[in-house]
Length: 98
Length: 209
Image (tube, rainbow over all chains, first blue to last red; front, side, top):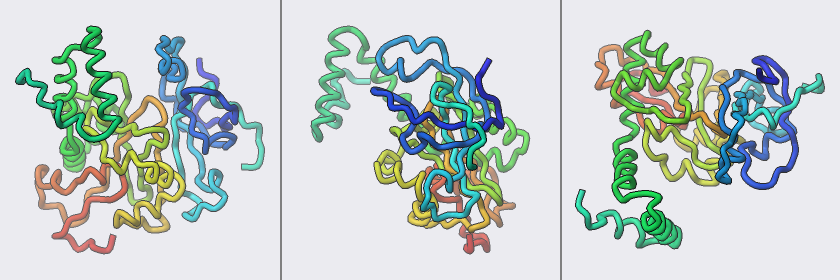
């Protein structure tokens, strides 16, 4: 059971979490679309400290329009970026601008 | 393998980081966490991997559509068919360039790379400059590698932030119909597999890009 499905609009949480995270700063607060559910993996935020990383966490491939990431993006509007984001870093995007 | 720690001099003469790694290695050995032969095995494993593996996969995919399908859907199994053992905990995904989409791989957080297939990444791939600019101005970065995708081609950047490693399947260059699989593999470079460039064929008419 995953919280998100392919096609869902999501926002990357803009939370600050100290220590090891796999969510890049430049994606925080940005909205995108779930492209696929990649499976469940041990949580790297715990693995980094010698913990078990269990329970495994769902990992999603999330797509973003480059123009939504960078206000001064110079390429065509269709240019795209994918990143792999763990479920604990995503929330549903309730409509909004994009 | 001789017992004289042949890698020792090479590995720790230069920087403080190398000295620190060597110190950690000695501690791991002394405490029995690792053995010298495990370390040697790991080095041999890494050295057995190279971009030639990626080129082989690409060339086979170019000549065999059914293999291409398997490469795109189950990369590890497809690699194993060619004797490339990419088994291990991380997943592999191959992304296909088409006439409409060009893919570029980066790891902004560190230096994630399909090492089990291609070996170690080039130094520039690990640089702050590449990691920050590839996501922000991918077209400018590719331009510096001598490749400028047309405006009507969508540039798609893959930031490998977690447990998946990405490799690009480039398009087969025009004019290569008469080349065999081995000759095709020679056209594919490491940079093409990362996506900062595309394979070129000098014998073709397609110097235009």
